[in-house]
Length: 143
Image (cartoon, rainbow, N blue to C red):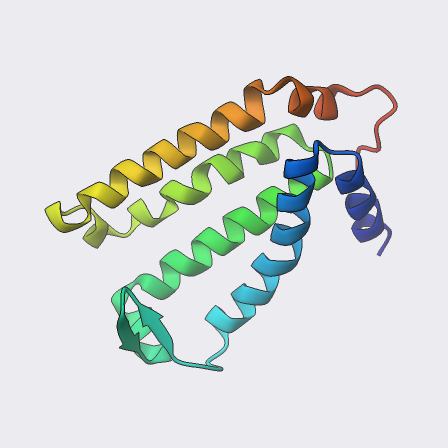
């Protein structure tokens, strides 16, 4: 429980936008992961309704779960001031590429968007002075 409170406290001293994103990701990713892993409801993927079993049979269930695990671990890691956790957030938008059906001409624009998003996240998390200061701050609460 102390870990949760310390991480949440750390989000208050982050750069504002990173703190908002972290707090949201720390709550939303685990909750959404429950909805992906437990057959509570049916899904709508790219405008196509899918049952829980279709979601997992198509590979989208794995992709969604992988993205949620990466982002959740990344946000909790960043809140714990683990600088290597930033890489999880960089990998999150390109994680759907592990599922082979995304590599087709139909999905090519999405591949470009995913790569561009990953680059923007990388620059923001590794080169913004305020974010670097958050990770390098002396006396910071490292969990």
